[in-house]
Image (cartoon, rainbow, N blue to C red; front, side, top):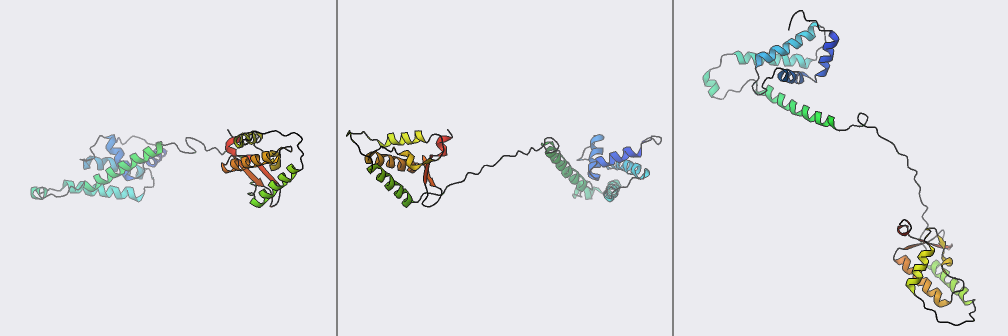
Length: 247
């Protein structure tokens, strides 16, 4: 590096902050000078690394201990590479002093690439903002199930009301449970609760009441209607199931 080259201290601080540590700096130097990470020329790499260290120290930049530790490691490896090596030791499989450094560089490079891929994924606050949607929660008050005895009492009341009706005209009625089921569902199509007694016509005879009652029980059995009451011994209500009214 030319001795008269002036580099502002602020610029060096920015350069230093871009490296995540000494391994990151070494990888940068290897890529910059097209060096082979599997056959590192230690003299050249050590020289380039020490240039950075010297510039940082010259400009009174505080160096982390790990940078200085790596410098000592590079100098040691370089010194071992310069020592004369007997051919017998080489043939016997003497370990290359650079092996540990190459292993650490390759592992760090893999982790750095993985971190870059993770950083490319969309992140909240950087690539998109989280939107909070307030949804008004409507809780439906579920009525308690009908007690069988209350249903029986309601049925007896309907029968008693039917007996009060006087029929002056006698005719044969064609009664169908399925037809009554269809009529009840049509009456409940609005989805609101209907009083149980409103399903029965006031002028119906006992036979018609029986068919309508059976039709109501069949609808409840097939879960096409819901039968509820607000309180025990209270009024009984019927409505079409939600699966029908939501269609």
